[in-house]
Length: 244
Image 1 (cartoon, rainbow, N blue to C red):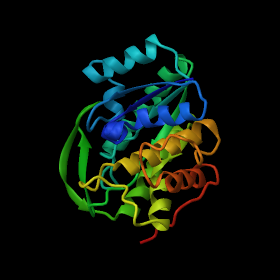
Image 2: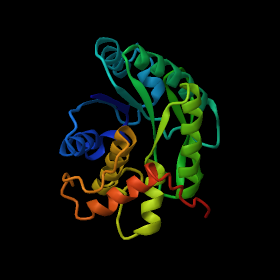
Image 3: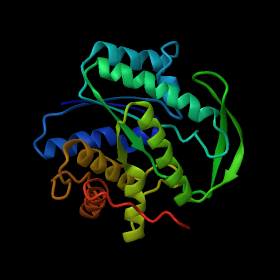
Image 4: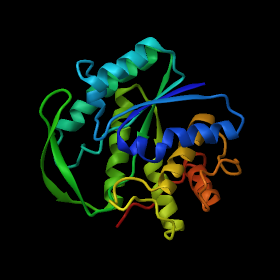
C-alpha cells in the first residue's frame, strides 16, 4: 500500500509519516510512505504547479501510483475571513482529481486547535499565497471545532473524502489524560506524543483496526493510552465535548 502525505509542519513535526509507517509495519502491513511538506504550506500551494512545492507534488501525483493521498487544510483558514477557505476548497478539488487519476483515495487530515488563546488571521492574495492581517482570540476547543468544520467543507469539495479526526483525538485524550502533553512548547505544533497520537489515528482510519497493542511505540511511555484514544475517536466515533 502506497500512502502520500501533503501538508505543512503539522505533518512533518517529529516525522509523523515515519511514525505511521513504523506503526503499520509493526502490525504486519506492507506500506510505502512518502510525503511532500513545507512549513506553513496551504493546499493551494500544493495545487499550484508553478511553485516549487506544487511542482514536486504534481510530479509525485502524476508520476506515481498511490492508494491514499492525505491532504491537510491549513490553519491559515480562520473564522474571521473567508478568502483562504475559498482558495483551500478550490485547491482540494484539484488535488482530489490528481489523486484519483493516480489511483488513490483522498483523506482529509483534520487538525487540532492552537493552545495559545489566539490565532493569526490571514487573507488570500492569490491562488496560492496569503497575507497576515492581525491576531484574534480563540480557545483551543473552539479552534478544534472550527478546523473540523473546515474539514467537512473540504470533504464535500472532494466528493465526500473520509476525515482523519486527529483534532478530535487530541481533545478526547486531553479530557481523559490531561497530564499527557500533546503540544510542543509553542503550543501550536505537536509534541512527540501528539504526533504519535496522529499516527495512530491515521492507522485506525486507513486499516479500520485498532492501533492498541501494536509493538511500535516510538519510545513513548504512554503509547498505550494514546493508542486507545485514537481508536476510540476513529473506530468508536467518540466526539469530544468542545464547549468551553
